[in-house]
Amino acid sequence: MSTTYTQIRTGLEREAIAPPNPSPTVATEIRGLARASSHYLAGLLGKFSIGFISLPIFTRIFSISDYGLIDLAGKILLLLTALSKMGLQNSALRFFNGQTFSTDRTAERRYYSTMFYGSLAMSSVTAAAFLGVAHVLPRSWLDAPLASLFGFVAVLLILRAMGSMLYSFLRIEEKTKAYNIWLVVGKVAVVVGVCLALPFAGRTARAFYWGSTAAELGLAAILTYFLLRRHVVRFSSCDFGLFWAGLLFGAPLILYEVSTILLDTAGRFLVRHYLGAESLGLYSVAYGLAAQTNDLLIFPLNLAILPIYLRLWRTRGASATTRFLSACLGLFLMAAACVCAVATVTARDGIVFLASQKYHDAARLMPIIVVGLLIYTTHVFLCAGLLIQKKTGTMALVLFGSAIVNVAINCLLLPKIGLMAAALGTLISYAVCISLLARVSQKYLPLRMPMYSLTKYVLAAVLATGAGLAIEVRPIILNLATRSAVTVIVYAAVLCALEPRVRRAAVSIWRQRGSSASFVEAGSQLFSES
Image (cartoon, rainbow, N blue to C red; front, top):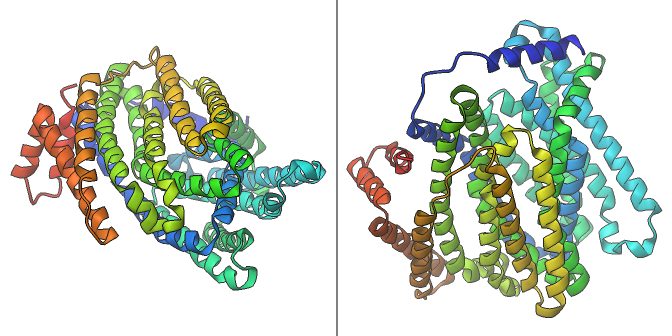
């Protein structure tokens, strides 16, 4: 094993046996989670806003079938990118040792050089293998419009693998402002790039990928320039021992990531096969809007909660970790029920307003997909025990099995009930996935599922949905705002009536109105008793 890897491992082991800090309360940990999540939420909100601006543009520029083709090629790209990264972006987080690097310039250079060039090498090999396989396959096996985009896919998977590593460097160096700024800049660059490509390539899927490739190439070049300017990357400093250790650490996570993408993607191929390109376009819009809604919850939560519960496990043990995750799960379920209600009452107008009238048939799919995605998001809490015990293989098997369930439902129902089968397949497969993950995870870290409180959340969501759907005003933007506001107000009012802890939190917020910390403080106390 190389000197660099030995130093990094020694530093991590020293950290692992360091004496724990004084025991904070669950409420303190939740406040910490809220602060950490808010940093990432700011960047996500910027990226989310750009997404909602670009969606109306792209859905109006491209035909329904071309939009579905763009989405399908994007899912193939996502799958190949996961394979090309080989888990190295996770290894970059795992093997970073700032204390060692601050005094050992050679160790620092070996780390950055190995991770940077290792990521470039693995993604390039994956891209070449993909193009080679696509070239030898019989033409009858390939969808011709989709195959015409494979060149873009190959280039983009290299750029995205490199981008993932460069973003990992920003995260591990705690450059949260730069991380969030570049996330938003990257999204804006893609939109601008696609718009600039339209006069040359026409309103086709190829125009979208010409613009995306140019934008992501420019972004990767800029981030690489800033890294090279620090003189921490040299090809001669690459350390094969560290690279191999990174692959060994990240490899088990590849199967999990790929299985997650398969669970998310499998239905799209079947929709295109059974129902055609236009149906895929409708499903892609409904799923895309639902996923963006879900991302507002899962993205900052996932980035912030993992280091907190790993630290709790290391310093305070299973009991404290269980209490923290159970409390967070309760808070998430409360928020998720409200999101489901709002998504249901705004689906019709939201689809028409954002994507145009030609996508109105997608509105009936969106609430079902939102529920499925929110159910799946609970894996952030329920899988903690499996992640702590490094049972990623078990997680991947469950996800792969759930993807098979999704495929079976779509094959069985798509010819019979049409596009609704794809939404039901998403909901049922995610529910099966979470049920199995919760079952196998319980023996490692048993969480308390607040079933009695969950019943109240569901009841409040149903009543709030009914109240929201009763509203009908014009114009459409006013209807969206009014329905959303009424739904949230009714949901909060019903919960205050049914749930004492929510009532106490509401009173606390009212008493501390004007204080910027009042919402976080009240939220942190909601489930501190558990």
